[in-house]
Length: 464
Image 1 (cartoon, rainbow, N blue to C red):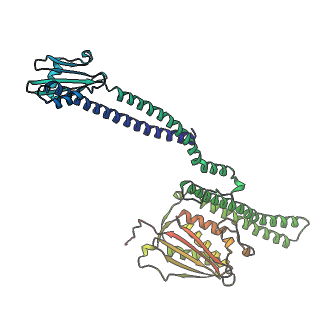
Image 2 (image 1 turned 30 degrees about the vertical axis):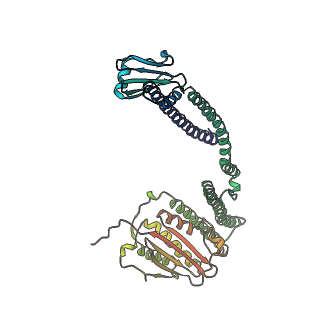
Image 3 (image 1 turned 45 degrees about the horizontal axis):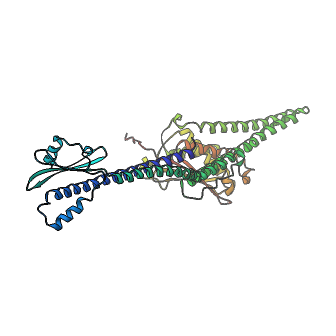
């Protein structure tokens, strides 16, 4: 069932239920009021007849005249009966057959003094009338034909009104639901036009503050993430192809030239040495891709232990110094806390060392004049940060958007040896450890990379 049909039926159902309840309440209370009002009129009539019958010999001429006038103001289909204490009928007004009376009824009236009840469509009132001649039972009855007819007309009006209102509600609900669902229809239409080649398109209903606008805003944000992901994928494929093609092309060229004619042993050695270097480059690229794949697996499958963050920083510095003995790395411990437990993190030692080494090596690599890097350990409220800063070439704002794309390299560092794997690999390692990496850079002023890891919770220090 379509939402439009469902909304229309629900709207019509709720309105119909309310209208039926409203109509029933009106009819019920109108019927009760009519019945009570007519009982009062019959009661008054019973008293008028009793006064006319028993006070005729006691009242003056003017009172008898007034009693006589009221007596002749009869009700529709009226029947009035009066019985003495011996249950003998002493007065009758109207058709006797229309009102059935027995001793049980007379005794009940004497016991309750006043009694209201119905016989079919006829309403009956019985009262115990006391006079100087004794006690008498007066039974008056009538049919409220006029009010019953009006009540029947009211029923017809309510039913016709209910059916007519239901038709109006269904039509109005159908129109209303169409208008209410128009933004959703528009969103669906716009979404159907978006494909992998049209990720730049955005939904137009994102400017309001209602739920549909919130949905459109959320969908637009998802499109932005998808567009960025597709762009990163395209950049990755382009850069990876270039990085892998370059050493392969070099190797094939060297080998083809060497095979064109006989060479001296020295020339063959040079070709083999060049080919070996290119093969090592391919090996580094393959290892980098393998490490990225390993760093993208489920974190629950990686063994994690409690580690000292400052000790990891020193170990990373030592590894970098072994690879580049002429580098200069300063580690700032000036802000170390008194509680050493705040330096404890939980993670995989080998992966975290790879992340730190990558960042420090990048700082040295892109500081060609001094091969130096400033490393600082900073504590936040719930985390530990490693801030690595260099004074190298810097990265443009446009290139900063792609620094975490594997094999991407900024335009101003194309002539510096590298593969564009370090930062993407570091980012994946940090994500596995619920950490973050941030890069800030300015052209010709340097780059600052911040690695943040959460402090270990539940760590119990050793007191040995």
